[in-house]
Length: 113
Image (tube, rainbow, N blue to C red; front, side, top):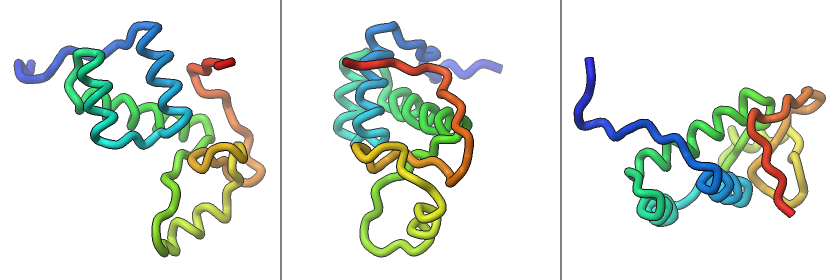
């Protein structure tokens, strides 16, 4: 069964992957306006860009790195979750690892200088 309304599967070029990964490292939860700009730039549907970020966060979680939004207001359940984890780096409020857990490297790791 095929869905004729579904856009073609998105496979980023190397340049697009570098751009998406750089944005993800700075903010793995881009705003709707940023997703829209990325979609227009790459000729995609905004949902395809949103799914790429969701899939990347899921891939990081499988690798042992939890991607969490910075807390807003008073959310006790998120505070409990964060206290059982350590930040991956002081520079980013998004990436956490469980205390004492071994972290597998994500499948695609790019180095930026």
